[in-house]
Amino acid sequence: VIESLFTPFLFQSTAQAITPILFAALAGVLCGRVGVFNLALEGQMLVGAFAAIVGSYFGHSAFGGVAAAMAATAVFSLILGYGATIFCGDPVVIGIGMNLLASGLTAYLVRVVFGVSDRVSSDLG
Amino acid sequence: MSPFSSTPKLGGDRLRIPPVALAIGFAALAGAALILVSGHNPLSAYAEIVRGSLSPGALPDTLNWATPLVGMTLAAAIPLRGGMVNLGGDGQLVIGGLIGALAPLFFPGHSAFGAAVGLALAGLGGGLYAALAAWGEVRHGVPMLISSLLLSYPAIGVTSYLARFPLRNVSTGLPQTLMVPPDARLYVLSGALNVGSLLIAAIALAVVFVDRRTSGGYELRQAVRTMFASGAIAGLVGAIIVLGSQFRFIDGALVTPAYTWSGLMAALLVSGEPVGAIVAALFFAALQTGGFAMQRETSVPRVLTLVLQAIVILFLAMRRGLGRRM
Image 1 (cartoon, rainbow over the protein chains, first blue to last red):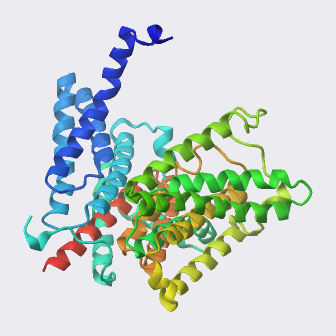
Image 2 (cartoon, chains in turn brown, orange):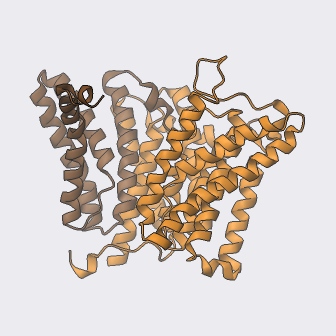
Image 3 (cartoon, rainbow over the protein chains, first blue to last red):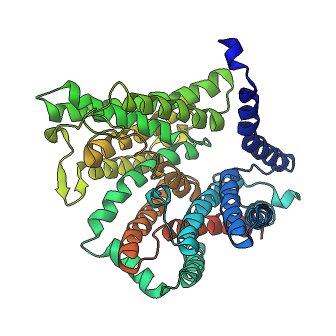
């Protein structure tokens, strides 16, 4: 059983599975170093995913998608950046609020931009 | 960060009216911009939200939608009063829901009794599960902020497994348990409203009373008991949804509408002050119910109400901080 477990496929899929977790963890650590508890990672990833689709669809390239995702998420993250420092809001409240905003905004815009609806977003409370 | 902008603690002054009005106004403006982008008329969309939530015909729907939301808000507010955070509402909700769906099946013929047992056991189950997180913190120093959230996942996983395999109703293609017998369902008051709403209203009154008038309100720091009360309400909400509207445990149906997170937001906005939290929960419920009418009548997607809700939350979170600094 052990031999059949340790195949090249295992290492490949592990590397694949670790990528989003590793990047999210890195982002969380970065915020943790400056004393802001980043609960909004989920929302930030959601905004990035949506912007990547919009960017690659209208830019006709994967690179355009990545660039759009980074730009959009950086702007979106300003809410946490300014909110938790200059406006001294509670990072936990802002983080959960941003997650809610991201799930609502992306589900709204995906309908407006692409004219489609997915079941998950229409089920969201 | 300068000492003046240090992270504000949860708890503190109560919400004043002007910031709330400002926040709602700001959210309405931002929402109007989004509606314009989609090529609809913001005014008619907002009129539909108000009519679809507050008109006499729609009011029972709003109250029915508010029932779980107010319940989960109370579940979040009680620990906040004692300086704790219960992030595990989803886990306690599904435990209560599953117990509520199963208990009547064990008492065939005495179904009303079965429903009562189900509600009681659901509260007990949710409460004990939440108390586990508190016990972990008091006895073993495991931070409750993390453990309460992490305990949610095994609860969701196990109930999902039970609904998909051993307890599944094989005559349907969906991951759900057997139907609750009709006489074990909660008594319907009018339209969508059932006895569960009265139960939650009674609990809300009790929480406000305990918080205001008794010494128990001051003793909230007793972590295990507080978390038991919080989890018990969450479990009860699960059973009320199952016995009052869904009539069976459906995998994912309690977690997907994000009652826990909306409730937590409503409670966090007023740092757990029960009356304010209930008002915030009612407002969110009206917004979400009105969203259905808006989507039906003007074809503006109803997730817009989620955006409005999030903007109100974000604005208030920052406005409070701004006010404190000046």
